[in-house]
Image (tube, rainbow, N blue to C red; front, side, top):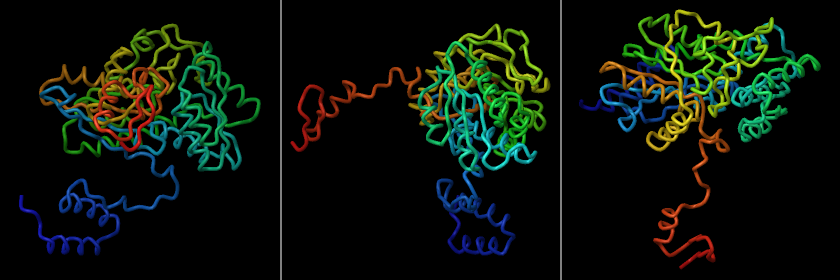
Length: 400
């Protein structure tokens, strides 16, 4: 099409300047795409009062034919665009704001939560911004970089024994909260968790796909908040859409059909009998979360077990083929989406959630075969020119 003239652009912008500010902002964003192309930068049109206001509105990105099967379209919603790089930023903001509104928190209070890492990082961020103290309990096997990130944000991290699994870190958080009078976030039982996804994540997806086809939505579960809340919003607007729920093949809690033993407050009373340790951190603790169990039956999801090796391999493929750096859980969700796409009718559109960033997994199996030192191929490249060589067993070379 013929590009618009600069005069036409100026006339349009002048009209928008006379319009109400909200309409003008939306119009200017549209104008930027028409006149300057989608890659042009016009800013967000907003100055944020604090970092928690930047949570959400994460982008949906198309997957290329390097990974996408022929005859279908695949997209991913990149939750690592949240300020602390995971979907759990939403949960932390939701729980803290809900507690503040209900008068359960006052200045100087302490937040405490049991977490595999992402929720703890998010809670530590919100606590730092709001001026609360923060204590996190985390089971020993989870990546050490997560502990350091939480401590960087000012949190105290209490590491619990590996043998206690997820229920052990939950028990420890409960004990500490009871003894010291701290506010326990209860991410696995707190309704503010899924309600925030119903209010934000789901509507964001619906807005991005407005007027477009969307046949499958694929997600995993940690607390179940994304699945429950976003799924509820999406299904209400698009009842024909199919939801695929992924869980580790090694920990098929839902697949087992066995119910979860609970305490009166909804927290787990014991480890689920179907649980086995798995490397997909952030997914499927050793119990079925109450938030997940309470999800409405109308979601009518299809359960898909995820092999751990496939999750790791797919996360690596997303990085090396698409430039999308996500964690093992993101790889698992994408693997489920790929299996769904391969079996879907021609023309189908599949959306998968990528919950967090791959930088959070440096000490996990995701990076086992990613070396820090130069490979033979890299050494050959280094030696292909004479200057600034750092070859093992030889003196460093600066100028040739």
